Length: 297
Image 1 (tube, rainbow, N blue to C red):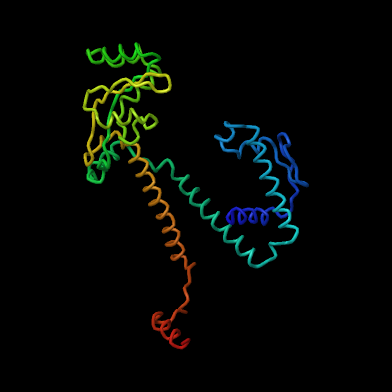
Image 2: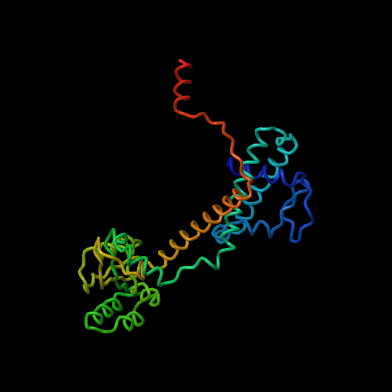
C-alpha cells in the first residue's frame, strides 16, 4: 500500500493539477475534473476477474479508482508535496521507477541479440547433467473416461488384447484428444490425475502395462494404465527441460548484458573524469567505531 501511495504521489508531482486532457472513449465515472473511461477501466481489470463477472469487475474497479482519486486530490489540496519528507520519498520512488524503466529499455534494445538455440541448451544440459536429477518418481500413463460401464469394460479388454491405444481412446473415451495427448508426456507422481485421488493412488501402486480396476467417479467410468516410469535420482529426458533451460539461459544472458552495459557507463564516466571521490572516510572505520562506543559509555 505504501508503494502504491508513493507511485501516486509521483504522478501528482509530474502532473500537478487534476485537469485531464480530453479523452476518447465512453466516460465511466468522473471525480471533479478527472475522468475514467470504460475502455481505461477494462484495460486495468485482470482477465480472470473480467471473465468471472464483468459487471462486478467494472464496479469494483470503479470504486477503487474513485477512492484513489479522492485521496490524491485531498493530498494535493493539503499540499503534501511541500513536506520535505514526502518530497524525498517521492523522489526515491521516482528513481526506483526510472531504474526499472531503464533496465527494461536496455534489455528491449538487446532483445534480438539475446537468443538461446536448442543446441546451446542441450550442451548446457550435458555439461551440467548431474544438476538435473528427478526429485520424485515420474510416470507416463493412459487414462480412459467413458459414459457407461460397458464401454469401459470393452476398452479395457481391447487394450489387454493389444489393440492400438489411439484406436481404443477414439472409440470409447470421452475427451479422446486430451487423454491421447496427456499419455504422451511424463507427469510427476504427485501431480498425475491429482484431481482424482483414487486414480492417483492406483498409479502409485500398479506396475508397468498393468491396468487398474474400473472406478465410477461422478457418473463417469475411469481406469488407468501405467506405461513407463522414471525413478527418483534418474536423469529426466532433455526434452522435458529444454524450454526451461532456454528460459533460464536467456535470463542469465540478460543479467550479464545489463551489468556489462552499466559497467561500460561507469568506465566511460571515469575516462571522461565525470566521477570524483572525496577522501572523507577515516583511515580505520573499526577503530573509530570502537572509540565512539567507549566514549559513549
